[in-house]
Length: 324
Image (cartoon, rainbow, N blue to C red; front, side):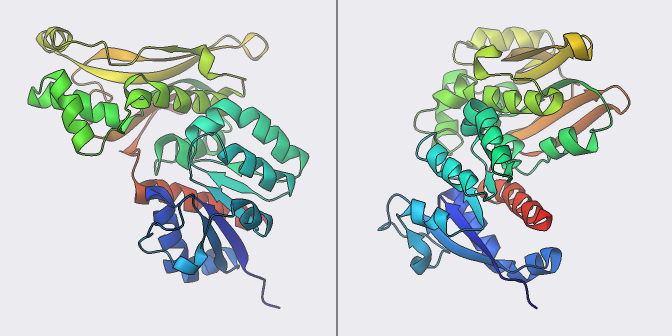
């Protein structure tokens, strides 16, 4: 007998959601070969149904997210924010339906509770796309290094701030002007606080620290300083010393398993020009993982973008369907 299709509910149709929708439809044959199940986009929940959604069948658009969740086999949340995203994710998990999300703030703030709910109802919560988009950092930390001991993680994990800092360092653009240009080019939101104050990077390093060491790290544990109080003089001094300023997210573990201490931080750091993190250009992300046996691993690539984040989301969907 032919296996029934997998009904996928998509919550959100922004840049990432639209990319996920296009790939689900366009790669249906590929995913069927890889999983043995046909993927069926059951619907796309949005707040404004009157707004045109390029590349998405209008008949799939709905503002009734709860009903859509209730008839899905997999729920994909890419709407962002805490509510109503959290309530909808919890609704799916209580039904025993696996959830895939790219919502970093949701996972950073409520991940442990959502994982407990998933465990209680025998399902799973996946969020590779919430950290560094297409770069599979969670898969490396949780799976590839499962037999090793990670000692430290550091990286440039926010492409928006890195674009700003790269304009200043390599092109000599004054800092305030670099922020303005980044906003005009779409690298920063209308309210750029989450990026410039390091909140985005803090959420990502919290998620990575939990994955690496299984500790209940929270956003309140992050020693955080953004880049908003940097001055042009700071950049001149850094250049004079042969260094480059980057916003670095880091996590490190000290002590044995019984007395483990994990610290997390996000702050501007003046790095030597030959440092791998100093060489992150424009909106690129670079992550360095230190492990006892594997040594130093470097992962880099696009840390944002619709297609790039969709790649991670779609990979999570394939994984949960394969697990059945």
